[in-house]
Image (cartoon, rainbow, N blue to C red; front, side, top):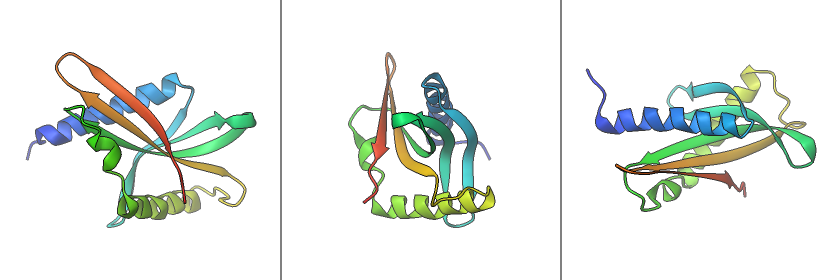
Length: 127
């Protein structure tokens, strides 16, 4: 069975987001990391943040064909809870000491229309 246009757009957006992050000196170490029936993290990457702190970044990518800020609104409490569970699993399986590693959740929103691509990058505050 073939991909839907939404799936094709989503895969394209994840590829664009990866290139965008690499150009900002992120080291992408995993893509589409999933935990059965719990969720998926689109991109896992290391990045040097404030004060030269090596930070493990879990990045959610949302791609839209219209520029209505719907991508930013699509990551709510339920999605964040799932991201936490999958991120914890990633850390455990990769021997990452969560108590002594800086961890950041981020979102890359990509809006694509016929003539323009708008990429927005956010740090998601963990409350």
